[in-house]
Length: 299
Image 1 (cartoon, rainbow, N blue to C red):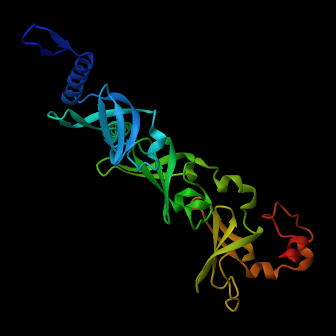
Image 2 (cartoon, rainbow, N blue to C red; image 1 turned 30 degrees about the horizontal axis):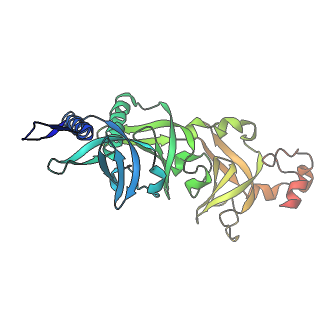
Image 3 (cartoon, rainbow, N blue to C red; image 1 turned 180 degrees about the horizontal axis):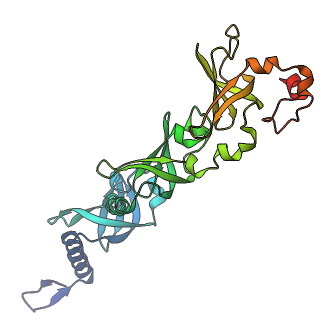
């Protein structure tokens, strides 16, 4: 680039550095005008962000590096960033760039693609990204879906951390989908073995099981007879003078089983009515089968 001419002898003063800087500046302007993504390597950490090498210096604010806050900026030195120009100072030849904008645009593109293919009943793979008291949020690849506690497991749980943790990859079924609100309801338990099928050999009327109390009311007890299967013990089928509490183990006789509605009623009184010699004739099965003398003694 000719940057000065001597008026007396016509001597030309040239600069390769200025020519390179001018060409770089023209490329930066072109990238800005065409909304293009450019790559640049982080060279230095400065106050409020990092500097990158574009052939000239560019500044990336810390808030524009990722969608989430960056902890240690020094870890970025020497790494390449994919950037878009978000501000130009033509007088000073200064440029401000953003990688966050690139990431958000890519995420939005994934969301739109996902919205076009998501359907109720699909089995999708996702990553657990957040836990709340009422359930777990799963990233399906641009859209977060909620697995309510009741859909995390067939068994009763108090908190989603009993089943999943952040970072877990899970297979889930799409239960509900609102494309306008971009809300997705998911189920994890539908991808798990059905306890009504898994424990079918234990679900017969008259069977006696050790169950765990999960809910106590004046009119009924709710007990878990096998993991994921509940039974109701109505008033009159348990001793109202006994103080039951959640987590307590009780002996329950299955009275009625409706496989269609998946409703079971049981009795604690009937267990007490069985003669001791009858227990000796009934084999013990995996801790969930008919109650024998050995189990009765340990309980």
